[in-house]
Image (cartoon, rainbow, N blue to C red; front, side):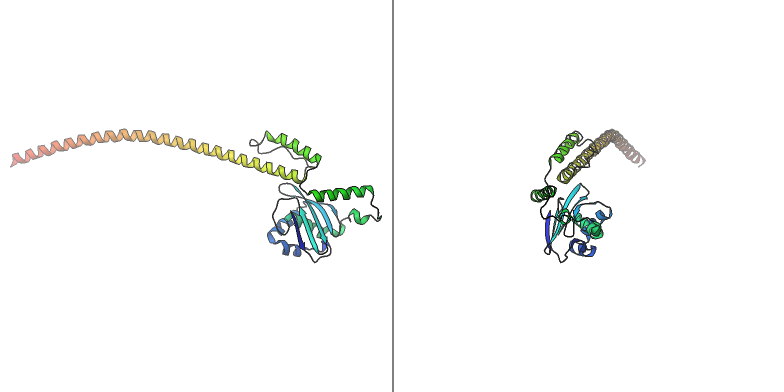
Amino acid sequence: MRNRISCSAQELNQLDADMIQSVVGGTVFEEGNQYFSAQRVKVLEADQTQITAEVNGVYGVYSQTIKLRAGTLSTRCSCPSTEQPFCRHCVAVLLHQFHNGSSLKPSAKENHKDPVPSSDTQGRVGASYSEESAGAGDLNFWEAILFIDWVQKAVGLLGREATLPPVPDSLGGVAREWVGVIERLNSHCLEGEEDRIDALRSLQSAEGMVENLTKKLDVLKVEAEVAQENCRALEKRVKHLQEALAKLSKTSN
């Protein structure tokens, strides 16, 4: 997720908590502040106008790149969030920069006084440019290998076990996001299986109740038939008594 907004600050560590909250709103700010307070922010490289970091989110580790250039604040995060104007992970990074900016090391670009970059610096700049162009969602070779190995182990457990194999600590970015997706899918499968088992148990219980009610109904039918026979016998007896009473009354007269 990429965003750009106008910004009057000249340096990133000038963005205090009140300014950040006024831009993103209370809910996103509180979430980002919780990540910052829980020390989930890991700064990879930072200076006064640019910072590259990682935040350990709920469903994985996300990468952030934040720049302040010519009155424009640019934020990029590998998370799938639609929070505007930037996500909680960028909020956490900005809060970390505000509170710890003075103790952060300047970037390699500022430290290097030689106008001709060394081969090491060229490699870092080239890698940074490549990452910028490709986007935070690309997998490198080793992450792909680790992810495929984890998936192969997890496939046999999907829908069966609540806990999937442990995720390698070095696995991050989009691979970590997909791990989170698979783990949520597994949870949904288990919930669906539990619901199916509960429904089956309820059905079996209902069938048992129907069977018991059917037996009781059969007993009641027998009792009703007996009651009907008794009623017909009583009607005949009443009729005989009425006839005998009529004869007795006629004899008396």
